[in-house]
Length: 326
Image (cartoon, rainbow, N blue to C red; front, top):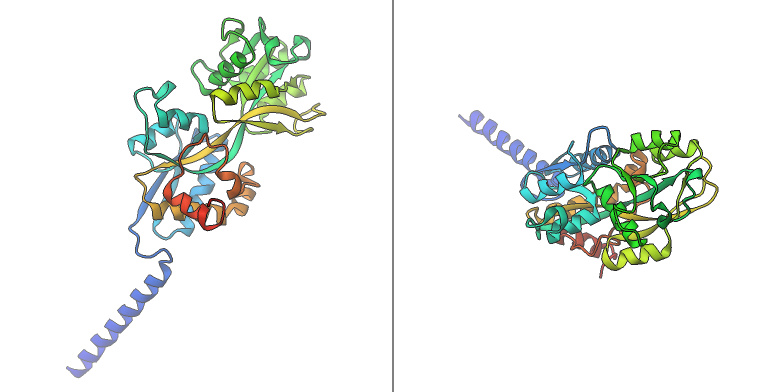
C-alpha cells in the first residue's frame, strides 16, 4: 500500500512538473486558441505568397495562434470575408479599406465600422506604360488614344477613372478604352496595337518589363495631378520608380501609389492583435528575405498613408510600446 501511495505521489509530482513546464512555454499566458484565416488573392499571385510568409511566422511563433493563408478573389473579397466574420486578417489596398469602412462605391449599404488596421505594408504603384509612337507625354495626352484600362469595374479601372478625371479628361468618353488584363495589354503594347495601358502592381512588374523591352516607356504623373487626387482621396501618395527598374528606363519616374494595408476586425481581441503585430515586426527582416515586397518595411512607416483609418487597439498598443505612437 505504501509503495502504491509513493508511486501515486511521484506521478502527481511529475504531472505538476509537466504542467509547470507547459505554463512556462506559454509565453503569452493562458490565452484561448485562436484560428486566423488570412485570404489573399489567387494562389499564383504575389499577394498569396506574402500572406503565406506572414501566417507561417505567426503560426510558428505565437503559441495560441493557428494561422494559414487562403486563396481568394482579391481585395474586395478579402474585405467582405472580414466583414462577414469568415476570416480574421487580410490585406487590401487602403482605398478599398476606406470604401469598406465608410460604405462607399462597391460597399454602398454595407459599411464595416468594425474594420481596423494592423499595419500599412508596401506601396502598390500605378504604372502608366505608353508606346513611343503614341506621342503621349502626360496623362491628358491620352485623350482620343487607344488605351487599356484593365477589367471593367475593377479597382485598376477605378484608378484610371480617378487619374484621368484629375488630369482634366472625361472618363471614359475621352478615351478609346480597352478592357483587358495586364498580360494581354503587354502583348498589344509590344505589337503596337494600343497606345498605352494602366498597370497597378509592385515593381518590377512582368507586364511592364515586357512592354519596355519592346521600346515602350513609363509616364510620369505630375505633382498637380497627385495633389488633386489627394484632396478627394486620402489614400494616395507620391511614389518614385527608380531609374533602371525597367529596360530602357534611364531616369526616375514619379507616379502615384496606394499602400497595401493589413486589416482585421474589432471582433479579434486586443491581445491577439498585439501579438500578431509584435511578431510581424520582430521577424520583418526574415520576412523581407522571403518576400521582396516585405523587404525594408518599418513600423514607423506602418502607421502612415493608411487613409486615416483607425488602428486596432492591440496594434496601437504595440506601436505605443516601441515609441512609434504617443
